[in-house]
Length: 186
Image 1 (cartoon, rainbow, N blue to C red):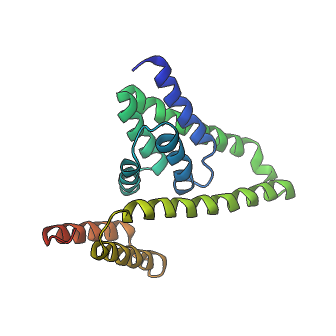
Image 2 (tube, rainbow, N blue to C red; image 1 turned 60 degrees about the vertical axis):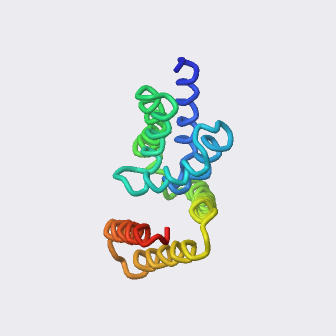
């Protein structure tokens, strides 16, 4: 891979890192646009699979996604540069906030800016949910689609209402998927 392609990879993830307000879920639409729509580094299905893997492995989704896509596009050097690109802005912003902005945190203008950013984050998270749901359900026959939706709703209720352990629920969902595969349903 040439130096210009590696530089592009770094700059794309630097850009994603700069606008990554709200964490991993809020950055999914931005990441999808850059790597699926604009640059076609991964397919839509690979992207959906990547989100599932990045969410179920240790570490932030942005970091896991950057490392995976970076490796796919540029090998070890690509993984390193994409990861650095996505981390540098967050590190710099948090450091700046810790050093200077924290004393102005309660200021009316700062609060207004942060409230506006929060509203944008909610919209980005909803967009990410729709993207993932579309990708997961796309092309599924009725029975597997119904089972997938039922598992998703059960997990949502288990986490949001019952405060059950998400890690255990992911494992349970994987087991259900394995059983349904052996039964020929998936």
